[in-house]
Image (cartoon, rainbow, N blue to C red; front, top):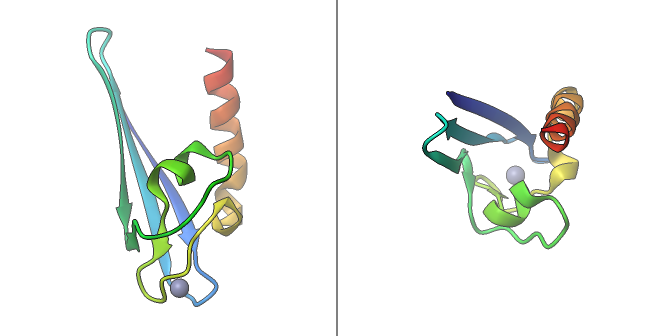
Length: 89
Ligand SMILES: [Zn+2]
């Protein structure tokens, strides 16, 4: 089963990018990959959010480092629910 999760991130400058996570698990093999769309890897983040710590996203337009605070607020709840689901399993 392959699952794709998109986390939209809004930069204060108006640029919008996203972090796309792909998770594949068929019972035999398991892989995880995250790619940045409209963002660069040149940001700085040393907080506790694995997604941001692993990818250090920065705005491709202005170069600002993006953190979980910049995640589209309408999707924040979905993100929290996913975390909860992962914790249960
Ligand atoms: Zn920006």
